Structures are given as C-alpha cells and as structure tokens.
Image 1: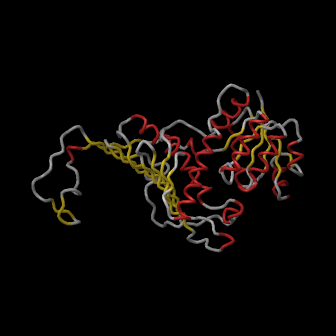
Image 2 (image 1 turned 180 degrees about the vertical axis):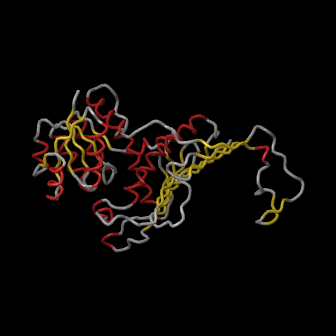
Image 3 (image 1 turned 135 degrees about the horizontal axis):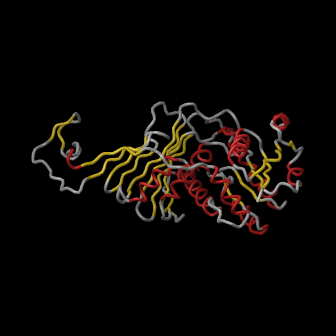
Length: 355
C-alpha cells in the first residue's frame, strides 16, 4: 500500500529525511512540508514539494497519512498531539519529547486515536552497534561486566537551537539518547543505578547552560555496568566501544574500523615466582599476559543493514503487517534514564531505581 508523508520542520534533519525517503523508500511519497521559516518553504518548492502555510493546512490534507515531526525538541509534543488528533500516524525525531511526562501524554493520545506513534532512533541500525550486539549475543566474550560506549568531537555544539536550553538543546538529548537507547536494547535487564556527571564546559551562560560533555554510569540488575560518554571538546579521542567480558575483551576505535578482540584460551594461567619488571616498575598483577594464553582476531564491520528498514517497519505497522520496532515504551525507558542522569549530576547522588 502506498503512503504519503508530510514533514513539519524542514531544517537539517527534515531535509535529511526527505533525501533518504526519496532515494530509498519506494512505498512512501513525500507531498510537502511546513516550516516556520518562509525561506525553507521556498527551498522545499524548489525540490518539487508543496510548501504549506501552516501546520494546520498540512494536517488538513487528506492525502497525507504519516507525519514526521522534525522541529526543535520543545515543539515535539505540540505537533505530535496535533497530528495524532488530525488522524495522522506520527514519527517524531529524537529525543521523542523533553521529558517523560510529555511522552506519557502523547502515548495516551496515540492510544486514544488508535494511530502509530514512534521515534526515529536511527542509531539502532548503526553497523558498529550491530557488531557489538552480535558478539555479545554469541557469547564469545563470555558474560560482559563492563561496557563503554562513547562519541567524541572537538568542535563544540553547532550554533543553532542545540545551544539553547529551553529548546531542548545539549548533548544528553542530542547524542546521549542514542547511546542510552543502544545500551538498553543490548542489555536485557532493568537499570538499577544511575550516576552521572553532566557538564557545561563551554556553555555556562544562564540563558544557554546546555550540557556539552557528559559521563553516565549505569548498573543493570543483572550485574552489567556501563559507561556512556559524550564529549564535544575532546582533542584526543578514546575508543568508540570498549567491552570487557569474563572470556575476552573487545575494542572498536571508530565507526567503521571493525573490532579487535582478545580472547583468553582455556589454559591454566600460571603465575611466575619472580617479579616481572615493566616500564611501570616491578609487578606481577599488571604484567602482560603470556602470549600462549590468549588468542587475537580482527572482525570487520560487515553487517548488512540500513536505516531505511526503520521506515519500512513503520509502513508495515500502519498496514497492520508488523509490530512497531521502536516502541514508545522503549523511548520512555531512555527518557527516564536521562532524567535520572540529570538528577544524579545536579544533586551529586547515585539514583537508585528500577528503570
């Protein structure tokens, strides 16, 4: 069945969706857009799209059955509810809402209107993430006990609404939401502890005190611990992923480099009687492991995937052929973890809950 999309908010992300859908999603047409800036409407016309003069006029178009909300974050709730009540299915850009209370309101409206409502958590289709998930599920690393996931840059935050707190700016809602979502999808256990440092390194003006660097420590009920880190002023970067299991260790340096894995062989580890001298001085505990007790390999990132699978799933869910992949309840968990992280940092406490 053919579907028609309308876009509310035709900035950078709205245009990205337009280009992707036009190229990849044959079962979805894009009819037009509404943007608060007239020049974006004129640009949309140059691309062959209709430019609506208001969100209401876009939502009144009976041809449109699916709406993408890609406005600044503080307008997500307003437009999502408006679209749902107009009888449209809704995709919302991430973060889905500003807080869990807003999300609960929108979920209730979606249920009342019997419409599909989801969030564009496109990083679930990242190939590095899928490689990590596959290796953990295979058991080759044994039971994971510590997982580090991070993204780092050195250019600060783009000079747009992402620098404005009232608009939902800051890195927790921009990138933290992706890394938290990925972690929650990998670890099948409730989060029971959250301890975080959320910093305003370059944005300390009271009007624009958005977070630009953060570390969030999570402990899951099954014992797995995780560190999520986002940095915007890091001149030297750390690995994208670093994972320790009781049978091996895995490291992924960046998005496309593949994984380096070192496994412990099933041989008895014999401690030398003498002290080993290293560059750090005399030690036995921190000396290199004997080569015959480990095995090394490199795994290329070859996962066959694309974020267009997100759109295909949304269309199948609208047609009643599939269950939605990115569920509002999953977005709610991520939102509550982020709220716990903000609270932890503000109060200097470890937040203990079951999320």
